[in-house]
Image 1 (cartoon, rainbow, N blue to C red):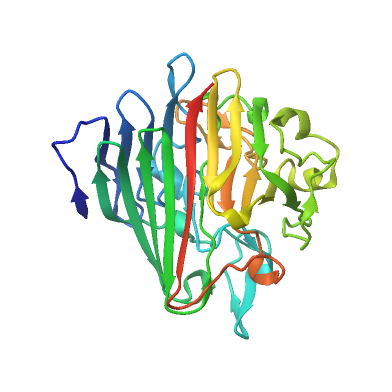
Image 2: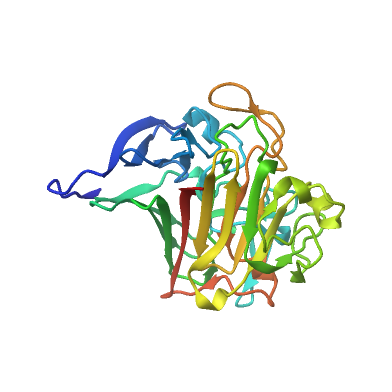
Length: 365
């Protein structure tokens, strides 16, 4: 591990390392706490590159965790809905667990009915990432993680070297830089799977959040949550979040797509994709004043409202996570793109570099 620390700089922001636990494979899992003094704190573990906590202030100065999490490593290793995880090689679903590249068919692990979801049975969420670099400065701290996914891992072609850099800035923004290279043509679609609840009280549903998404269209799905291939206008549907909308006002509206998913579990076609990195979404919780803004260079974002949380997973301080305890804002390319030629390509060739960035910026109103 490479450390870059200038002890002469003012210590407004720090990064601390500790042992989080020992994995089932008898490997150490480390915890890194990125912290602004008197402000936001972000905790990340090397197992799955998972965010286990984001503590932010409300308008009254109360510091609360706003992402769903577990109390120990064993719970993260057990079956769970990707709490806080880095997702790869392919975020979201690939139909029937297969796709073709250059005339060759690749068979993937099926872990979501007949489909492959979030990289398969052992995706990037279930591996221990290597710490490449830790940096500190007067205005930011960063943690760079890496993982080498070997050729045919979970069925995907090519040796894929992936690095993800988490950077916390003093403006209360968490910047995530995804980079990858391959030695053989493959598909890549990386994302981050934190579940947010800006109330800081996970016994409460997220239906009291106002959400805004800069998207004129969304990606409808069939009954197995695979895209139909269409990009449908949000006009006059519950999927129109172009103005800030209270989730509870639309999530139970009569609409076939809501019926299929049990709420929202869809990819929105983000506007102005050609302009690159831009603000694409916000979520606001009126009772606490907390706001999260999403900035990205991606073409899509999966807005998922925790529809499959079913009261079986324990919260750290007692109780269980129920349906709609949290929501995800997963910046990405569209689901099943390797099988949908009309969608933007997720193919990465040998010698090419995959690079995308997303920022979660926290504030109070």
